[in-house]
Length: 242
Image (tube, rainbow, N blue to C red):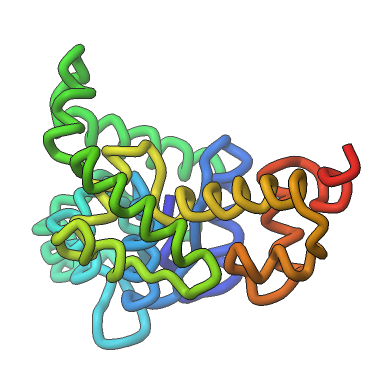
């Protein structure tokens, strides 16, 4: 899930409620531009966005992109209930609303209803879903080409645009298609590949952890160690000594 909210305390509270309810918050954005970048990176299933955002693009315009280009479920967060705001928001066809001030109960209900509405929109899941996903996703050849590209460029800054160019699709379409094909967002997939390569190097070489962190694309050892421990459950040094 992606939280788009420019009030820092509100964003933190909402994310905490979602995490405690068992959901995964992939990112928090405080403006539409950051939200679009996060959607390309993480391909979230649900976006919770405040209607009023700083910047040129407000939450309603962002919501239209969420629904049309990224095909994710959408929940609007708002304390504004005037007729014009309601009219504009309703035209986007959100899957639900959260009214400020909110509680853990109202958030849980809103998210549950939103996901139910989203599933209803897209029809019941049946035995052909996997094949449908394959057709809507990327080909095995395309995934293989992306794999090869990632393997050759671990030590570089890898962008969604570069991966989308390989697939010959737009950035917004790429994240969705990639997730349908692999079950993971491009960001999750890249992190897993980097950590898998780090594990291989830790097992089979005597290179320092600092050097390995650079080889697999982390600019500093601390960031690498944090990512490694989050995924593997132990530090790189502990993994090497197991």
